[in-house]
Length: 109
Length: 114
Image (cartoon, rainbow over all chains, first blue to last red; front, side, top):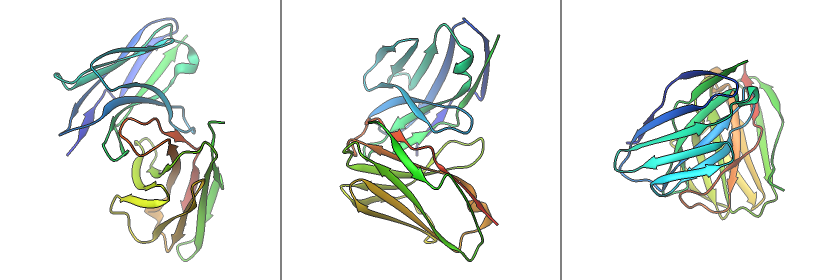
């Protein structure tokens, strides 16, 4: 089967940098994505790593190491609006997404 | 236009009712998905349609019946639901049903079964 592990909650202050780690077990996958979901909202795509290394998109960066079955999402210059749940997601070969349990990020002033 | 729309936004139904959820996208995407999300849990995949054909059914009970009338529309027909089926039902679409394709989610239908 496939499984992902990520911290359930993270708290940080405005302007800080936070890293949300994700470890996974899978027999095969296309890549690791990150989705953000605000309370009451829909998941929205943030970042995707098909290959090992770092991908940067504005204040957000994501990293993947297939050899270590590990990835992370880095959020810089945190803003209050970044308070949300963040899911690491395995992309299956059938187009299916397998979501981790999510990390609830709380940004404090 | 990167929008996926879903109707209704909220739905309350009894266990003997029949209702339908609707999803629409006009991005030319050829893959569409239904997910179920319970409170404080991640979305769970229910069905995948690719080129209007059902390609994945994640062992969903038959009281949920998906339908893809055309490439822009996806329906989920509900019949004889149970209270434990109360959840947020999310529709998503992607360019294709390939691994790694970004999925665009609609706002969801919040369903309450009494």
